[in-house]
Image 1 (cartoon, rainbow, N blue to C red):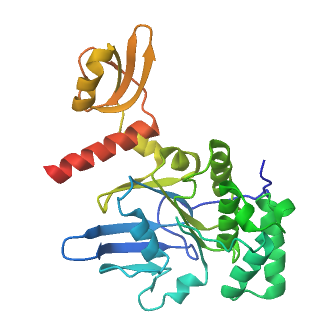
Image 2 (cartoon, rainbow, N blue to C red; image 1 turned 90 degrees about the vertical axis):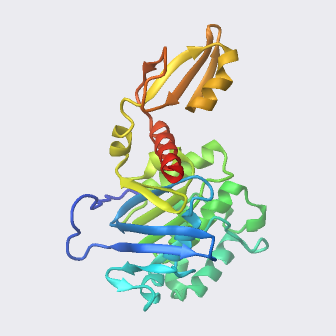
Image 3 (cartoon, one colour; image 1 turned 60 degrees about the vertical axis):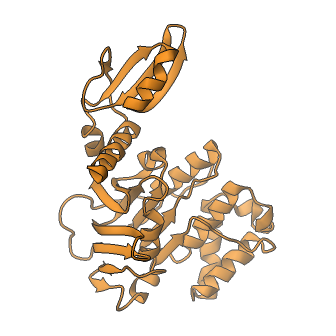
Length: 314
């Protein structure tokens, strides 16, 4: 079990920000790589402290948006501002307080955990003595203290991810961006990583970009749905669940009818039983022979993605 520090996190989620609150504003941002490839289309979001899940399928535009927010790329249109400062004019206003764990996080395999974090701290321009204290704190927080002198190349995937979040937290960032952080982790490591994100001490904006619904379900105070480079919604998990009320159904069909059902509906899950295949599906209309089911966040996500595809092809 990972160790954690006890802290009181108070997030401003609803309403206008109070004076002194952190604010990340994404104003009509678009990204075009060439005449035909539009990766982002008119994204507008205002984020205040809390954990914001950016949820969408692979290829939805999440990583492109994360690269723009991390000042690694510039938008083709629109603007991003940090506490009112346009990042196109002054990217360092954010870089000084940014922590970033990219999807493809690389390490120097021959360095120990301490050596690697000391190197990253130097790159970030942190005071050497303060960095050493911070590294000790993070290694304890992430339960890496006993492996501090082992080569990072010998770490498991979950341990490497913990080193990744440690380097992102070195400067105690006000904006923390993590891109697909649980991809490739086993279920136990994934659960631990979620718990860490949800319990990070201090007031900050955390953006968790993922295609795994359970990641945001366990951590996020707000969810931004994205597909095809378009923002579909930005709302609380409870509101996303409410949007699926009356559109989730369960029924039992013989195995021979399953393929036809898959062609006609979005299937959320199946389970084979002695009386047939128990099917859970999402649809605005009740299928013949089906009964209502209580929506899950996975159901609501599937429904939103299905509606977005219909709108694109309408």
